[in-house]
Length: 151
Image (cartoon, rainbow, N blue to C red; front, side, top):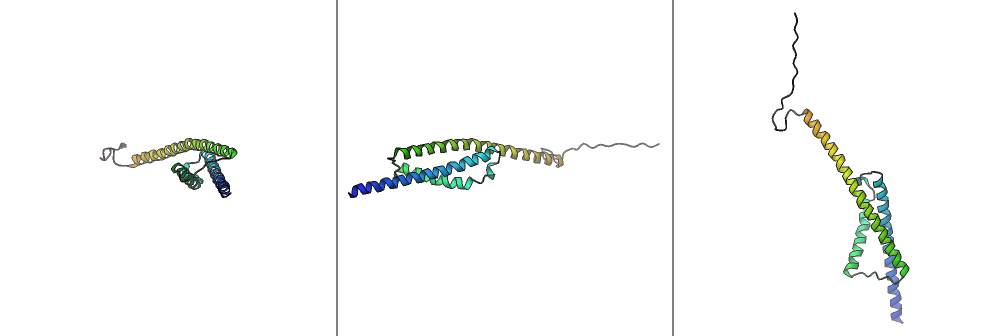
């Protein structure tokens, strides 16, 4: 009798871990989807408010996956419906993360273009007011001179 009770307890604990993991994946997927929506509007990656929470949840998820890979945590799921829910959530998270990667790369490229445009404007402004040329010597400036003749 004790063995059956222990088996039911371990199954219930396993189910609780799976449900907790599903909730974690749902939270991470929701944050990534929100971030993707903001990136789609053209917001720079540095201004996103989800970054800290996304990183925190991602660390928890990575730790759980690492524990499973190391064998210290088991996620055997006997309930077929629960297993399907977990797999569905993992696929949704993967799709959201793939989109996130594409959008973040685009945001970084846009930020780099903005930075380069600002730097080019600064270079041009410095070059126009600097008395020195590219060689470090005083640049010869064009001087207009005129003469006024009076009779």
